[in-house]
Amino acid sequence: MQTETWIGLGASICTGISMLPQLIKTYKEKKAGDISYAMLAILMVGLGLWVWYGIVKNDWIIIVSNAISLLINGNIVLLNLLYKDSRRS
Image (cartoon, rainbow, N blue to C red):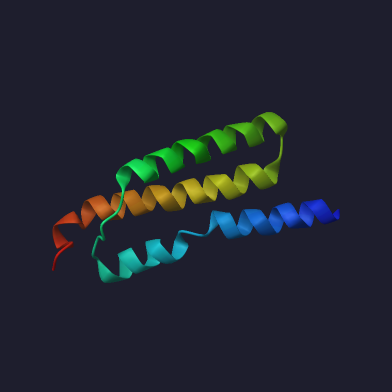
């Protein structure tokens, strides 16, 4: 692999899993924190567009990393909606 491929792979891994600690924390504590749904919606639209761009460019690094990030963020939204009653507990 070329150097730029390794750089892209490293960047994709870091950004793709950046919200994973938040997802794990929310799941373990069964508590939702104050979260901006507008921010997450904009982020998820952007991630969806990155996946689409990756498909158009046939770039598996872009497709996989952004799809994983999209799934993680989608799960954060779901858990926050599920645990919204436990916010202040």
